[in-house]
Length: 302
Image (cartoon, rainbow, N blue to C red):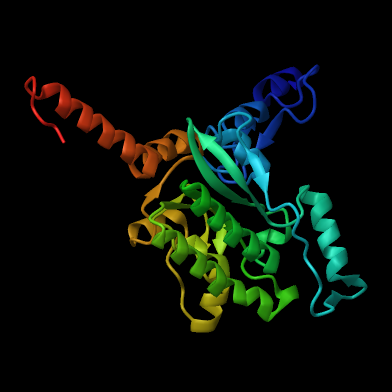
């Protein structure tokens, strides 16, 4: 019976290393861990999208070797002298840097998707739940200016728990600051694509993450300003099933499309072909060339 049991569940069979199998957090099925990793950290059984780090996302979605990081010289300060017990804000920041490998919660730079050069920002949930402080807001604004200077589209992958309470009003001010930066890229006529991942909430959603020309989301991502339990407690109501998930927001017109992580790269490439200034100029040049080739000899095509 012991042999049959091992054969049936596949977990206790001799010779199988530990850690090769995992239970999906969504469907509770036992799945092969390397298969999940090869599937861009998406459960092959139910499609549950696991959270991934910012550099990992860049490796999965951008052209290999194309990422060039910017904004590495910014450093957070402690304007309020904030502390919880014996841990100061600076202690918390240092711990977050060790856990995430980043200096703050937004990784910025230039990259390419199927040859299309973009300015890209990716938020890191491992850094104090990608909360928005003064450095994050400044990095986003500088990224916008970089996109305008280089005349390239902007793509931002958002993931946040909201504003960073350790910085008080300075963190809340970043909502207006980043929203104004979006106005700048709009005035420059450059496309801004916002991709909402799990979770995107609070001040980040209410500012730059919710202001994209095109707003995409990964399946099942939590997208909302306030938490479900907070809303239910404050309003004394029972919210519908799936409230503030990506599918609910799509049905109610808040986002434009839900895109699986495994399909995100080609989907973004198609959008960039349609929206990027380089593509528009190339298409115009192609039409002019076609018109010239169709014109009779000696005709003036200007």
